Length: 82
Image (cartoon, rainbow, N blue to C red):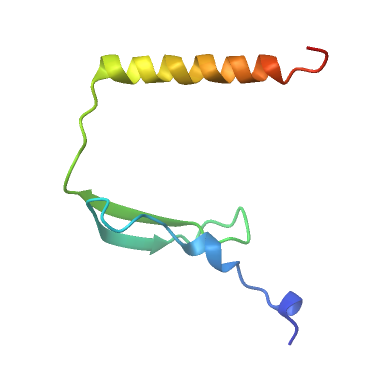
């Protein structure tokens, strides 16, 4: 049987990826075969988080503004006719 004749979902669509060491433990993995909007197999997973990083809101806003400014600058530099 040729590969194109197979009627199964691509392998990547039934995976949930996370990095080892992210302080996550997978508690549950489920395939939702009852959902038929696509030929892909929708999946879900439940994780337990054992460590949470706390971010300083002021620092987060500062970094976000910096990224937006840099993006605006880049977009202006690559505009045609500039």
